Length: 280
Image 1 (cartoon, rainbow, N blue to C red):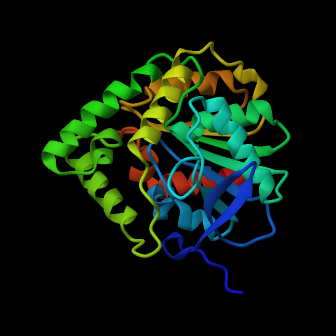
Image 2 (image 1 turned 90 degrees about the vertical axis):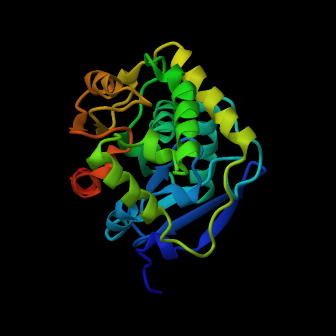
C-alpha cells in the first residue's frame, strides 16, 4: 500500500468509542509513535494547513480528528476543556494507541494540556501553539474578540480567520490570503461545517478555562515545544511565555510580526523546528 502524505487526498474514516463516532484522517508512514493533531475553536478536519501537516507526515504517522459534536463526529460538544480531553483520550485509545505525540493549536492546545495532566503516560512529546494555560489572563476575552472579528469579516466578505489569526498589515494580509487558499486545496470529501450551537459551546468552555484556577503546569514533565506569534490577539502571547516558565525544560519560539496563526504564517520555520523536536 502506498503511504499517503498529502492531507488534501487523505480519506476520512470513523471510529466509535463511548457511543460517539469520531471522524478522522490519518496519513504518513505507520509503525512509529503517531502525532495526534488537536484543532482550534470552530474548526473541523478541513481547517488544518496542508503545509503544516504534509511535511510532518513525510516522516511521521499523523492523525487529525473532529472533536465530539463537531464536523462529521457525532454527539454534543462538551462545555468544559476537561471533557474534551476525555474525548481525545477515548478516541486515541479506540485506535489502539497507548503512546502518542500531541500537536495542539489554540483550543487544541488547551485540550492537550488537560490530556497530559490526566494521562501522563499517554503523551511522549507535546507541541503547544497559539494557546494558554487554565486561568490564563485574557483567555476569557476570546469570545468578544471572535465575535468582533467575525463581524469585520462579514462586512468585507472575508474568512474570519484572516482577522483572527493574522495581523492586518501587508505581510499579515498576504499570509492570511495564502493560508485560506491552502485550506481550499481539498475539493472532495469535505467535512461538515461546525454548527452555531457547537461553536457557542466551545466558546463557553474556553471562557471557563480562562476563569478557572491556574493549573499546576509542573505536572507536565514531557518535552514541550511552545510556539506563538508576537501579537496574538486571541490568546495573549504573554501566556506562551508564562507556560514556558512553568513547564520545566520547555522550548519557546515567538515568531515576529505575526498573530494567533503564526505557525501557519511561518509554516516552513515551524515545521522544521517541530520535526527536529519530534525526532530528537
